[in-house]
Image 1: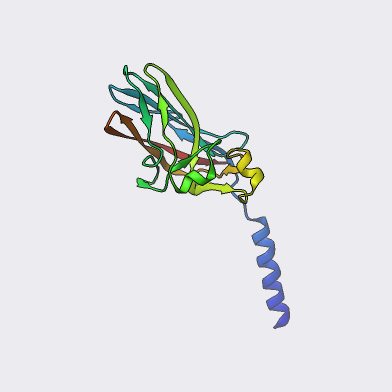
Image 2: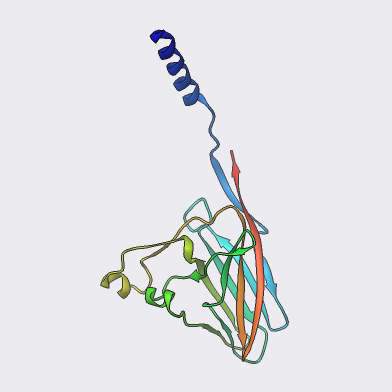
Amino acid sequence: MKIKIWSVLVLLIVLTACAPTKKIKNWVSSPSVQKGGNKSFEARFEPLKGDKKFFVSFRLSVMNKTDKNLKIDWNKTRYIYKGQPHGGFVFYGIDPATIKDSIPPDLIAPGKLFSKEIFPANLVAFTPIREEVLNKKGRGIYPGPIPAGENGISLVILQGEQEIVDKIVLKIRAIAK
């Protein structure tokens, strides 16, 4: 009886070791760049890989089409995953102390193009907050992998006192070998 049990266990181990595994070959976005906007601005939202095989951040570009300043309200702008808000965005150069309190808005001058690499705050790894991290102005922030599925931004632009919300969504998927 002992021999049968050991034989079955060895057979299971061998079969499990020989089972094919799916390896991720590439991550793709559909579309590769998603556009949004209105008569006041044009926005582009593009996933970025950096030096990774998977997406870790997004490039947000906003063109001000007005003759007045526009502002991006980072405190109200949200990361969208599967149709639901999942926290805000952070970026290199941000003071980690402002993430919890109040992130200053970015100003977009009339007729100018604003562009920034951003990543979802809830997917970010932070190095322990020490004096040297704070002195590096956000260099202790490391973006994590963007999950497959519907990803996007609920972008909040301030035009004077008016708040404009533009939802821009794209789909990310992993292609297996």
